[in-house]
Image (cartoon, rainbow, N blue to C red):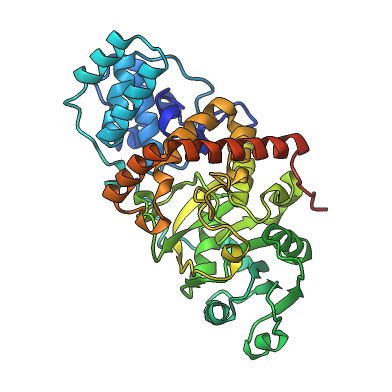
Length: 443
């Protein structure tokens, strides 16, 4: 990351890591066109010129910059005061104080830390997403890819959700782009084969006795006939232009993946970056179109995440590190109902950081496995320090700042129990790391 202090707040972010070509995602401002730089003016309040450049580069990514400009391969160490200035500009003051505490506990020079903290106290927070980079030619863009009419394989694993799957398939019947197959991997009990007879769709139905989400997706990908894979969930609703917008975005940006935004009916606030195009730092297997060739290059989903969480995040990170371009697509929206029954919920997991029983591991071991495998133990510890206390409160309160603070206070009160949960998760993640990834190749 261009600023070291981001490692405290975003220790397991995709963009923290160098890709296979040894480059980061952040554009080198010295090689960016002047017209683009004008959209993100320099901040001359930084002490060092390098911090000004890094700030400008970071803000370009936040505003949705997508291009082939030369990017940074390494970052220089910056003055402490510039680190605090950057954090104050871009994060809530609570997180600035959090960093100060972590820095002091970590035995950094207390005089330098406190001085820099107070010298930057007048810095105002800004929101780069209010004025994103606009891609004005997108609206009238005539996609050659759509004209070529490639076959798209829509993949839907399902488990005991026929009532919701009915609406999913009806939405697919209404798609304006029609050259697609639907591969449904049904794990329901009882299995209702006749349910699928009422739909006017090219459905390839697969019954799977084992209740396993990543096995289901991997089987469907191997069965697919299309050059493009569209991963979908069985509790979602989409508009008629959903497939069209995914294909159009891939073509417009010459990208490899189109990550549509998912609007949840409850839970965390809708991120501000969902409103505009940008380089995606996540992959949601409920709403993403990608080239099938990517699976042939980097393999299928890692089954170490079976019946747990973040299998899609791991694959997205793997694709990012391999150099594939993933676009956050505001026009390919889905409404994610997040129903309380069936699906992964029934397999025993919903929120990756909230165990169902007091002595269950926190977070789910696959989360720690992902953190440690790609980011290392130190970053994993920082991620747990930041996320575990707030995970005490249920998912539905994630949009309520007050309730999140209550969760942090409760976590302090029950810290012995929380530590036992975290140590248990860490140990189980160690077992996964020793065993290694379970990634099957696609021939």
